[in-house]
Image (tube, rainbow, N blue to C red; front, top):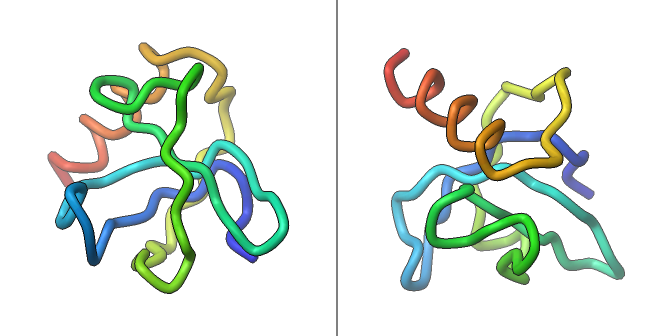
Length: 78
């Protein structure tokens, strides 16, 4: 199970090569959001097999789309 707050990269689907934050885990599925196309209010349900887990787990709150966008922007620049 991928912990909430982990930054992941999509390996398959429409979101391929995009970075996302895991916002929820549920029964073998993870829900991801990027704060732009996929908002916190309507996260994408994704099979963890189709995600590449990074070593980055965000420690600050990921409850708003703005926080997620800012965190991913900093991650993409590194």
